[in-house]
Amino acid sequence: MNKPEFTAGLNIAMKIPKAQYEATVAFYRDTLGFEVEEDDVSYAPTVSRTHSVRFGPNTLWLDCVDNYSRPDLWLQLHTDDLDAAAARLAGSGIHPCDEVEPLEGLDSRTHWIKNPAGVVHLLAESR
Picture 1 (cartoon, rainbow, N blue to C red):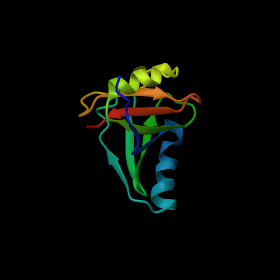
Picture 2: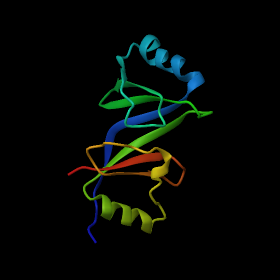
Picture 3: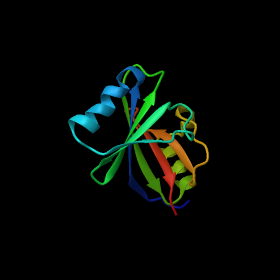
Picture 4: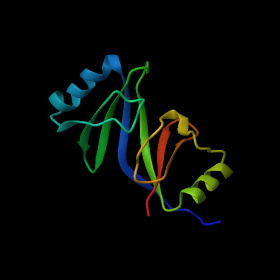
């Protein structure tokens, strides 16, 4: 089996309940003065709206999730070999949980995983 390489991705997603969404967008845009742009969410059927925020070298995605009661933070990882990475993670008790947010029409192969504390990570293959 190949030993996959893992690297941090540049995307961070903050999943925000609908009732707190507008105030959170305004915080980054109006209070902090960051550039905030609304983006297309057709690829993620569980997200009703999203805004991107330049957050240093990262992109912070403010995702409105209508059925959430509290905010959640999601991170991104990259690997050079998704199959080997999934096998290595499975050996540590970490299994894909792609049901957390179905994704459609992406350019790369992906899996959603959760770390032992329950924090969601998008694991994307980048070659």
